[in-house]
Length: 332
Image (tube, rainbow, N blue to C red; front, side, top):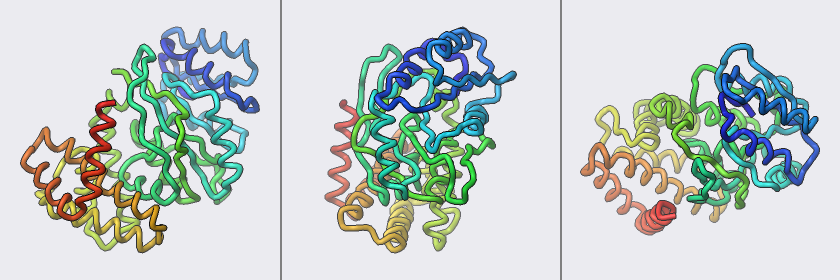
């Protein structure tokens, strides 16, 4: 855990780890030169439980350099992440460690998140479980799991400790998942493991534009590895559309559909999914396009309708199914 001026939610977040049903762990917490009551709270908590290892930055470094300081000090086989305003469910570590122990080919495991507001009131419940191949496919477009649900192997297949990239302030969890998938598989448990707090101070809200820009770059790199026959311009335009609803470079709606279906086909040719996984992958394709359409409608309603119409012609059943799923999640 890395924390900067997080006193408001800190005790609840830390207690959610200390109260886990799995008890054999070290809890590394990096205080990123906080100026509020965070240092006092952390010292009190550390006195109460000797599993807490405190690390304090002399100056503010940011979330990912701070996380790397914890990774450098870690001794365990696995790393479990939690942001200082979120809450881990009591059996989270037990479930995830058991899964990783039983599936050594898996390098990262997450789970379903339950959204809560600043007062802790629950709202939407995110997504469902995800097998390794659909997990890998979704990682072309977005982080398949929220960061606070991630538990991953500390040492890579090359026997080197894994670290976060520090070149940008945002979206480096997305990049970390790309690194982990270079070494093994990913999996999303079909059960809730974390309560994700949504409030105005979230880094994803305060740095939205930079996060989108970084995510587009990471997505484009992933798409290029799977589908090198597509042009760089088309892949970047697809990533920009899915992530931010932005049709760049004059890309036509038909080209968006063509490009994502080319990526889907290249992925299926490369990995040969089962019929079950193929159906999920194709549903994810539709879902990503509809997410882009939902974001695009604020810029161009006509363009958004054009893409949705072309998609419905190519995938009528899955489009209807995903529309209903998206609407039900929004109502929740």
